[in-house]
Amino acid sequence: MGDLRYCFEQDKVAKTLKATKAKGLAVIDTDGISKAVIREAVNRGVFVYGYLNAAALEDGRDYYKAYKSLRIAPYDGWPGEYWVDVTARAWQQHLCDTAEDIRATGAIGLYFDNCDIYYMVGHGFGGKAMRSAPSKDAVYKALANTINTIQNDIGLIVMPNGGEDFVKRFMKAYPGRIKTINQEGVLYEDFKAQSAAERKYRTEWCDWAKKHGAYVRGIEYVKSASGILKCKAYYKAHGWNGLYISKHTDLCGD
Image (tube, rainbow, N blue to C red):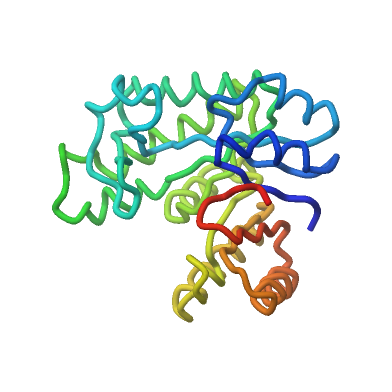
């Protein structure tokens, strides 16, 4: 499946890029990383995707204060992170500006995270809403327009992470526009075997995406040798294209 690494820990990005082989793919958080460091990897033939948090705002980012008024609700399980109103023009401009910055590093694509906002606005935020949420249709339109702008005008490949409800709708409306998707935890999540029902659901989604022309990549959080072998065999049997095994709760690029 080739050399595939994910690293969203700032202090480990340079090491990850250095370790990635030519024609391998490194998916990284480019925030705070020197363009020269990224360019060195690109010049060696490494394909780089940058991280873009499409629908959530983290309080540790330097742009947090500028967009905190757009917070809809806390993001369960991620202290200091909040779902945001993606329909706001200011947020859409922020995403496009960030994509421009990532493209300037030599990256060829984006890991487009948290499209699950489309699902969330339709099912609620557990009574923790900080402001009224926009409609599903408005969220769909905003995300779709942003993806189209990033791909058509900025020139980056957009790889959604999860968010299958939104991505399916988008792929049906724009056949061939999404060329690759990412899915976490089909078989293992937080180093525990996924439930049979959840495994079936995520497998069906990845198979659907593959059938509709997308290159399918996945991340599995597992440490055991037997679990790693199981993941490799499962991905191969389904014809999925990329597998990253993470032995840490954070994606460290190892």
